[in-house]
Image 1 (cartoon, rainbow, N blue to C red):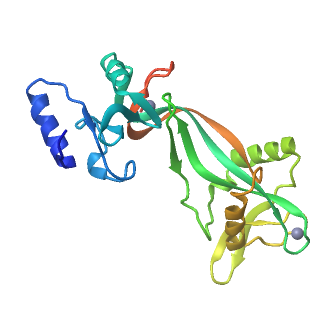
Image 2 (cartoon, rainbow, N blue to C red):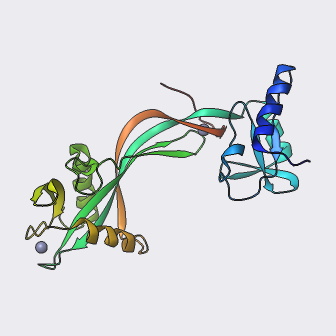
Length: 238
Ligand SMILES: [Zn+2]
Ligand SMILES: [Zn+2]
């Protein structure tokens, strides 16, 4: 084993590939996983990290620790490979939370959408964030009709509080924007108080539940070590 910079891996891979040699690096990488861009693997630099720096017994493939002997077997038989996309069933997930009204005291259910998640065939999931709206937005993923229907259905099965209203409001400083208001008395729920309530709810078991809108089979560009788990490897479907 010898020290080298990320660019060395790439350059030295290119030299060996030009000589007709297939290369996979087993590397001790210091620091947090993925922290160092220069040693992030791709097809021109197939690099796996040792599970324990300095110990060649096992490597890290995604969230798994795999014995190095097994890794070599899986790699040589095509069951572990670097893929440029994560592919599999996709869904938009909304998170739901019950929020007590500051005025009437009754709770309404509010929701937020993180984005589209693709569950890769190898188990890796990838998220396309949908945060384009943000504060004071006139368009928000939360207003999507399929999302709203899924949220209402989930509220019904969970026996949760009525859904808050989501409608366009007008403010002198912000102009028009979409905001939640109380299902019972129509009091406006400010984005800042909601935001801090989401943060609190994250620490309470059962305070946040999910509603899911399936979005078929999709792929997202994300280079990763992909491992066969009985569903094939991830593919570029686009
Ligand atoms: Zn109210
Ligand atoms: Zn994969």
